[in-house]
Amino acid sequence: MNKTYFIILSLLLFNLHFLNAQEYETKTKNEKIGITFSSFGENDVFRFDELDGAASYNGDYFYTLGITYVYPFNKWLEGETGIEYSKHNIIIQPNLPPDIDNSSREENFALVNIPLTLRVNFLKYFFVNGGLIADIDGSTNSSIDNQTGIGALLGLSIKYDFNFGISAFVNPYTKIHSLIPFQVEQYHQRIWENGIRIGITYDLRKMK
Image (tube, rainbow, N blue to C red; front, side):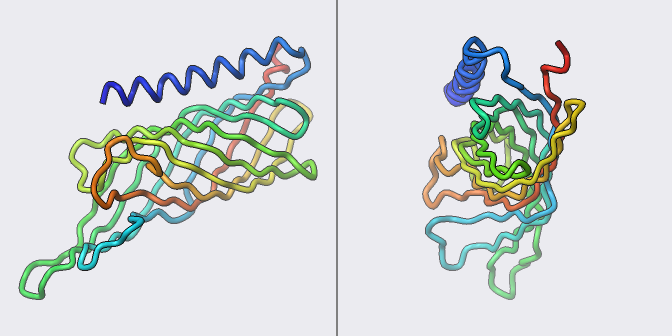
């Protein structure tokens, strides 16, 4: 587990160093920092190879709180990173014979996500975003396979930039956690998430 944390931390530090290094290329870059909230969608558990007779999993709810950092490479391409905390709740329905209690039960777990993504801006008010997510599963006794690993996301957003430095966006997205797990289980379970992220960022040039 210590090795896992070291790899993810190294990815984050490398990404931040790379973005900050670009600052020396120009003094007109409008870096942004902000907060985000994600929910309003579905979450589910799936396997690439489903098992006959296995329990069924139904998403109950999820939410994500995040701090985001956006760095523009040019007018149409931006890098985005940060850190997020996610909470997921899943309903598990056992597949058992009728004479055995097969009552459903809740399972919840928490993830820390570090996104490493790109934004492609177009038509002034829109951007497509996508890339990788470094996931850290904070659960200790969950019956769902550990989600620590590398995930992926893809989204489409509408945004508006105010003259006083505030930008707001609404970002429908699809996300898969633990696409490449660090702790591989046979028939490894993965979390699929389909939701809406809303956020507010502030142009750091306004502070100078």
